[in-house]
Amino acid sequence: MLSQNDELMLKREALNIRKNILRMIKAGKAGHIGGALSIAEILTVLYYKVMRIDPKNPKWEKRDRLVLSAGHKCLALYAVLAQKGFFDETILDTYGKLNSKLPGHPDMYKLPGIETNTGALGHGLAIAGGMAMGLRMDGLDSKVYVIMGDGELAEGSNWEAAAACSHHKIDNILVFVDRNKLQISGPTVKVMSYEPLEERWKAFGWAVRTIDGHDLNAIYNACMDMPFEPGKPSVVIADTIKSKGFSFAEGKVEYHYWKATPEQIAIAEKDLEEIERSLA
Amino acid sequence: MSEKTKNNIVADKLEERDPRKTFGEALVEVGEKNEKIVAISTDSSSGSGMGPFREKFPDRHIEFGIMEQGAIGFAAGLATTGKIPFYAAIAPFVTVRPFEMFRNDLGYMRQNVKVIGRCAGLTYSQLGATHQSLEDLAIIRTIPGVVVINPGDPIEIKKAVHAIAEHYGPVYMRIGSPKMPVLNKEDYKFEIGKGVEMLPGKDVTIIGTGTVLSKAYFAAIELKKQGIDARMINIHTIKPLDKELILKAAEETKRIVTVEEHYLAGGLGSAIAEFLSVTRPTKMKMIGVDDQYASTGPYEELLGLYGLQTNQIVETVKSFIEE
Image (cartoon, rainbow over the protein chains, first blue to last red):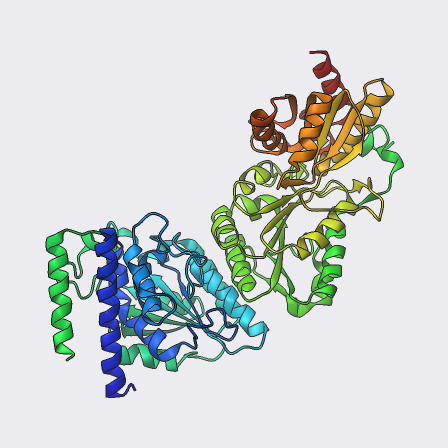
C-alpha cells in the first residue's frame, strides 16, 4: 500500500505528465494524446516508486528498463523523463519542430532515458524479452517493464515473443497492456478483438492480473508482487480510459491523434486546473 | 571430373570445404575469445553450423523455434545488455521475413548483432523460390549502418567471422551451402570494406562476390590464357563498398563485369553502378539472376541457367569486350 503522502505526490506527478503532454501539444499542434493520457498513472508509479533508475547515470547497467512498445504513447514518456531530470524540461517545447529531440515515436539516441526505438507495433515485447534474458544471464536483478496497447496485440509478433518469454521462464519482466479499448479506427473489440485478453495471455504461459489502470495503489501492488508466479512472466491488463483527463476527449476514438484547436486547448487547461485544485 | 565441377576449369584441383561447418568452427573460435558472444537459432542450429558452439557453450546458445521475427527482437534486446548475438538461419528467413525487425531493432537501434543467412543465393537449389535468397543483399544494404558481407571462400568465411565479432554494430553475412573451393591462403588478411585484387589486368575487370567468386576467378584465369588480360577483384563487403578499388579498376580497365548469385536488382552490380554512374560512368555488364523466380534442380546446373558458370562468364566477357 502507498502512504497517503506518496499517493498525493503521485497524483501530482500524474497531473504534471498531463500538463506536459498539453505543453508539447501546444508546441507541436498535434499528437497521439489518447494513449499517452491513458498510461499517465502507470508511468508515474513506475518512475516515482518502482523503477531503479538514476537520471544522472542513464546507462547504469543495474538499472531497470522501460520498453514503450506502443511507441506512439511517447508524449507521456517524454513528460515523465523530463520531470525526473533525464533532460531539461524546456526540450518539451521543441515537440513538432524541425530536428526536435522529441520525434512522434521515440529515438533512444536523441535523449537519455529512452531504451528502445519503438513505433512500429509488435516489436517491443521481443526486445524486452531479450533484455530480461541478458540481465538474467549477467546475474543482475534488474527488471524490465513493458507498456503495450490493446490494439497493438493484433500484431502476431507479440504472440511469438509472449511464447518465447514463457518458454524461457523469463520472470523479470512485467508487461502492462493499456486496455483503453479504442484504436484509431474504432473500438478494439470491433476492429480486431483479442479478447478475452486474460485467457489468451494465460494460455501463452503468463501470470495475469487485471487492474484499474488509473488506480495508483493497484499499479504499485502489481509491481511489488512481480513475478506473480515464480518462473513465469507477468502481465497486467490495465483497464484505462483513453484520453483520460481531457474532458472533451475521454473515451472518444477521434482523439487517438489530436489535431488541437485553441478552444480545445483552453478546455484541457481548465480540466487540468480543476484536477490541480482538487489536490491542493 | 565430378558433375559439380565439370564447368570449372581448375576448381577440381583445389581443396573444398563446407561453408556452414567453417562458419561453425569460426564461431567457436570467437566464442572462446569473447564470452559475450551468444548463438541464437530458430530450429536450425545444426543446419546453420552452430552445433559445435551449442555443445561447447550450452548456456550461451538460445533456441527460439521457428520464430525468425521474434529471434531478431530478442537478439536486439540481448545486445542492449552487452551480449553479442550471432543469429544464423536460412537466408530468406533472417532477411526478407523479419525485414522490419532487422531495420528497426538492429539497424535503427544500432545493435551489435550479427545475422548470418545460410544456404543463400541459389544454393537451396532444389527447394525452390521460397528458400532461395536472391534479394537479401539488396534489401539489407538499404539499412543505414549495417555492414553486409558476402565471403567468397572458406578462408574468407572464417576471417570474416573474426572481423565481424570485433566490429561493433549490426552485420549481415551470407554464406552458401555446397562445399566451396579454397582460393585464399590461411594467412589471408581480411578487412571489412576492403576489396581484394586477386589478379592484375588491364583489358577488363571482373568483380565477383560470395558463392560464385570462384567461378569468376577461374573465368579470369581462362581469359588470360586466351589473351585477354582480365583483372579480378573480390568484393566481399557489399556495404560499405570499396569505392577506391572499384574506381581505380574503372579508370584503368574501362570495362567492368560483375558476377553474383543474386538478383541483378539491388545486388553487387547494382551497388557498383549506383556509385560509378555518378562518379565515373563506365561500361558495365552484370551477371546474375534477372527479374524472375528462379527454377529448381541440381545447383551447378541451376547456376548454368543464369550464366554463372565459368565458361559462360568467359563468353560473356569476350562478347562484352567486342561490343
